Length: 446
Ligand SMILES: *Cc1c(COP(=O)(O)O)cnc(C)c1O
Image (cartoon, rainbow, N blue to C red; front, side):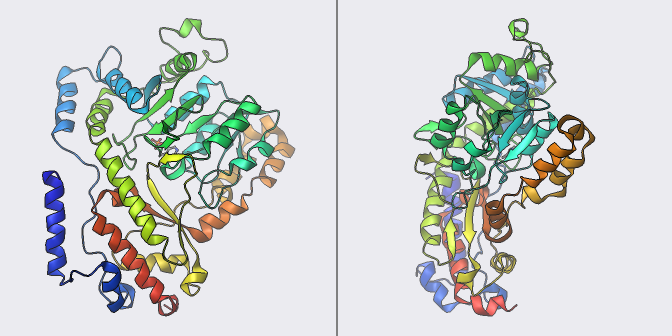
């Protein structure tokens, strides 16, 4: 155990003593205690792991860039160093640093020359950026409903959403857990469609031992502050296709680049500035030294927590597909069934859990019900491109009832930082939920 870990776990023991907790396992202690929301003691009295983790490596890498005066990647060493390291850590042929996860996706859609009249398939259970990058190109976003067990795109429903206008599939490894890669890739290859993996939450997650982002034509990652790898803002593309890498490089660099002249027309005709700064790359290089330990911690805690929660009626951790050899656990996603909690609303359950000192979120609202999304049908450019009838038809077909049920009734999240702490924290989470379960009848009347 390192020094940090030792101090943390010994302060934990001290805390337990201060609370007068016996050596009993938490499950047995809880038999005698009331829910905090009913006036009992909080289950959680520790401290959650801080985020971001910062220290000497970050300071040293950042100061090196600052003092060098080379703050832009052009002709500078840091972004290329980061790319080389990220490429190696993901086992990929090429990596390209970008200014954000959104611009990593934008760059790939640009390299594919996705535009007006094209359809791109995406899941509704995702961060809105997945949708925005399609719409920014005036392409039509086509939603494929969610598999409620896994929270991932229901891969068995993709094929029926493909039309003669479909130009790409953009499935998301939501929560950091792989979607059903085998089924997605089978459909894609049957219809000869490129797959852009939105792996913005799935750093170093694995399907059958291979890192996600390596299965499609390209994979996008985000280094926004909440993500498992953090430089405030930032992103990256990985790909095993040299030609596609060249197109991406060119697009993210104003359509320029050493190979720009050799690019096919149609992909080398547009571009932007979506480059990563040297400062972002410096922070990432330092943060990446912490990754193996953090992966191990999240995986172990998540597996342990799933074991505890699976025992509680009405609580179901999100299913991991059989090919999953590692989830990044950006989110710890699980489902709540109020029938098993005396009909207690999910919002009351969250309040009760919060009262125990456990942060918990209901997660995404239903994307296909957002006014922001519905208003696309009234956008003047969309009306011009797809016609009134086309947009009316689009609106009539965007409903995703399974996803609605997940978003509105069942989904709950813990965040990745909660999985970085001590195993005792997991015991306290389960303890709190067991208390709420036991007193569900009383709490549901609040
Ligand atoms: C965070 C995220 C993005 C966007 O990344 P940014 O770096 O915030 O631009 C895209 N897709 C998903 C699924 C994300 O979670």
